[in-house]
Structures are given as structure tokens and as C-alpha cells.
Length: 144
Image 1 (tube, rainbow, N blue to C red):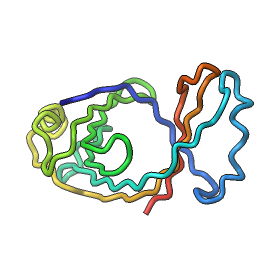
Image 2 (cartoon, one colour; image 1 turned 180 degrees about the vertical axis):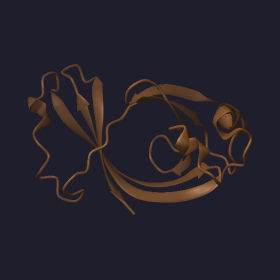
Image 3 (spheres, rainbow, N blue to C red; image 1 turned 90 degrees about the vertical axis):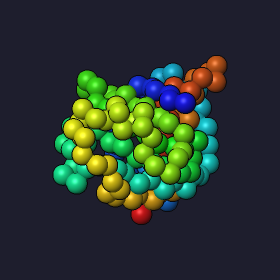
């Protein structure tokens, strides 16, 4: 089953993933009532592209990730600004046909193969409003 969502992601380099004393009190931000820790996840992501990196050249990424709440295949396609459309498919051993087909206009039929592996430990916090609705997610990754 394919699932899509619009994602706006901003990445910042933190002074430390282990010591979070640098992180300000986010409940002082208008609308945020509390910060809820969601624990740690061990993530293992293998990124796929063509030999000449056509996906990266088109600002798209394809990965197979295990660990975390959204383990599976993820194809991220550029939208306007810093937003992207993320298409998710459940885990399998090979690139799912649905994602290969969606990436075809960027790969122009070239073979997709693993190009890089990233392992990380992710600490996740949800920024929630007074009704308990999640407004944003803050993730701190220790990347290996």
C-alpha cells in the first residue's frame, strides 16, 4: 500500500546530540503547551540512485529504512520551497515497482542501486498544543 504526505523539513547542526542543554525551553513558543519525549529509535537507511546520481541531481531521494515508526521505502520528490512530497511503501527486499515508476522521469530508465548507507540513533520529541495535537516534531540524530 502506498502512502503519501507533504513534508516540510528543516535541518540544523546541533552542538551535541548527547547533551541537549543547548536546546531552549520550547514551551515558551506561542502555541506549544508541552514537549513530549517519544524515546530513541535505531535507524538504518540505504539510499538508492543511478550510477550518475540522477535522483540527487533532480533533488529527489529514494531510501529503504528500517527502524522507527515509518520503516519502509521512501521516495521524496521536490515541491516548492523547502517542502517535498514523500511517497512511502512498506518494506521489501527490492525497490518497489510503484516507486521505480514514480522515479522513472528522473532516472530515465537507468538502474537504481544502493549508493550510501546511513545509520543513526534518533531522539524524537513532539511539540503539542493545549489540546494534545502534535504541531511539529523535533528529532535529534546521532549519525554514523
